[in-house]
Amino acid sequence: MNLIRLQEAILRKEFGPDPEALTVTGAVSMYQTTQFPGSSVKYHNHYVLLRVEEAFGACSHMPEQLTREVAEQCSGRSVAQLLQDHRLPVRIAAMDAYLGAVRPHRTNCKAVIGIKPGTPLEKAKQRDLHIADTARIASGSRIALIGVVNPLVEAIVQRGGICLPCDLQMEHTQWGQPVEKDMNIVLEQADGVVCTGMTLSNGSFDLILEKVKQRGIPLTVYAQTGSAVVAAFYGKGVSALVAEPFPFTQFSGGTSELFIYD
Image (tube, rainbow, N blue to C red; front, side, top):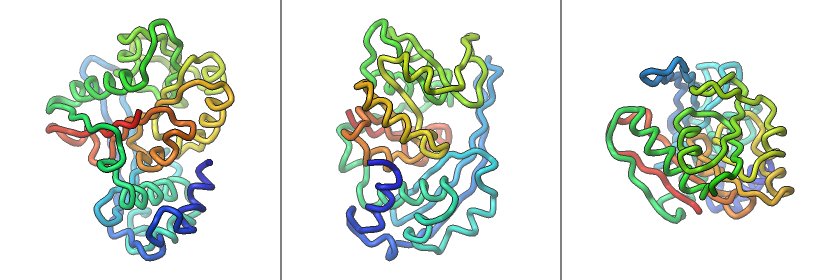
């Protein structure tokens, strides 16, 4: 299975309700930045959020992929219409909202973990240690990290892994380690892979999935973007998933939840 086949399966009603009968009642276009104390790295995050019944579908995207008008263009339309939109982030968010509504994490995941209240950095460190634990990193194993977040680099190292960072936008980690831009290089070197859900919106997820299957190595996904989409691939190339549907940890100082598939 790949993303196109998943989209087609939803349109054929293989997951339950007819997506033509479900309406996107709310849509949000959001730009958010994060810069942790003592770090020179500023993360620039662009999101589109779509509401279907009780679920929010989320997709982080590059600024050139969508304009702010997407919020006006998406609300009031059916899921089926948006699944056929020409813009990939819209399709991902629509799939995520649909699957989040019909296959909620709370009733399908293996465990729910609470992230304690705290500052953005404190919560990020808690979260990323859970991601590293879910990946079951063996001491000395080489872990390709596709989509670099510095606290997750730190968590991989703390668990004894050798981090192979890969990101299209970042040049170096907080500790000066060069960041590779070509994911094929780190995928060939790795004993295991950790990637973020943004691989869905930049078109690399299917390629990663194919590569880990070919090499027989585990793939752990940490997903804010498309968390319910990735859950559809659990056991089908995705070995483990840490799902964090909206609202994300960076938007709340209180308790947050992670949904674990492993």
